[in-house]
Image (tube, rainbow over all chains, first blue to last red; front, side, top):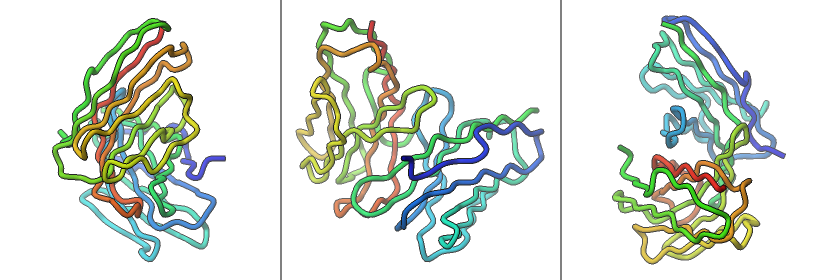
Length: 110
Length: 115
């Protein structure tokens, strides 16, 4: 079964609104990462949060991690049309296996 | 540009063909990865090399054969593929010789179609 599962599967918002995506996972982790993918392209790393961290910011991105609930959220504030992409969470559990979820497809309408 | 390049970007091949995908990283990283991304499925890890040694092999069919001649180059040799192997194949690298699950840098992918 998947380690990371994103919710919602798809999200459509207006430009300027905030977008929140959630990720749940099943086992203990060393870190959790969020990646972005534009259609048919490679993934781009956004942010990494370690298991002993609770919140991290990078520009318009805010990531939270709740290890007791085994969940994380990615907030994009003041969204732009260029934020339209798929967003994936990925869990690092030790070793080389980083397990990716199925992703949330975000569509930001101009 | 992430510093990871992949060629070709698109490949169409018949089931009896033999082809190779190439990945090159210009980041000085120690670990390289092959992933398969099929429509509506999570990214699937296929192989991992660390310091040119294969450290992960995720039950991938033998019709996929990886090769890592040095820490900057990674190949995926393909032969007698099936139509269900059609997918986006992504290469990634990381500065992670100890396997801590750190940030990976992805190439743009090769879109493979098997007829």
